[in-house]
Image (cartoon, rainbow, N blue to C red; front, side, top):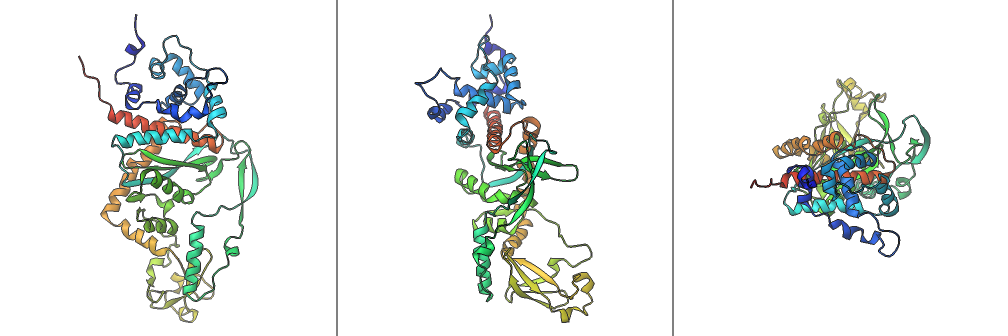
Length: 439
């Protein structure tokens, strides 16, 4: 005679997870989704969720394969509470329950936050510094099967406050405000829409990487625990959902002291948003986009008092207007420029006139650039490779999100929440495990 418990190693990961958290919290989350008066008895919801955790923690590619593994793996059976002879549910059970009960709910989001709350209670979270980035997950869609469509461009999250800032700036310069209908004029663009998964987005990284994909926009704290995630089509730029992700982190975890992100997030709007909310921006060096052989923008000195630029030869570039895109324009006097010895390095303009554009929130970007040189920022930014980059590396190599078999934003959001909840649970279980003492 032998008991199933004797076959599971004392330090197996499933033992660590079972010892770390009481999964019975799931019952209260799903009680409104089940009826006690109608139909035959359903599979235990805790077992359903644990089956999903086995899939995502151990990087099994599908629920069908997960069920096959559970049938023969004693550790998985022990984790689910099955005996040697208990029948394992059919692989379609989870999918049917998702469609009938969970699809229109936030149950997986609740489970994610509950595990994170448990980590916080165990004093494992350090939220002073938050690291934000995104990774692309290849969609379950043929890149050669698509339709071209013309769609309306998305409105930026900061559109309203930028519009207010632009008109305020124009009025300060004696210009008329721009009418709201010009700001809100519909703009369109042509996109490729997959016929297999229309909710994915066509993503182009280089000549070899062109595919339909989703973006997992993710925030992690100093110890590598994932704090939140937003899933979008793969053609949505990182900066477009930055504020929404930060707001979710603040609402759930409180406001961090600093937020670190890569060069894709280094925009005037993001710098302004962080500094105005008393959060330290930690952003990297970005290379000048000026052509080689030409004077860089930093070669021209901005005089804040007189609101003008001064060129290396001492000529003044005066303010002209503020565009609806949020840029102040400064022009030189062509009469002074035409005989300038630096003209060939300054501009290619046929009228011998130099234009410099300065965003209305440029000073925030300059402050972020100033902070970049501080020791604190260098220390924080260096930890990206140990936190958010490590999260994505592990998620792709060990937990199966390099590509997906699911389709649609709702199902991808479920996968993201379950994957990162599983990773948080695995980390928490490993860190809090104390081996049983020998007799």
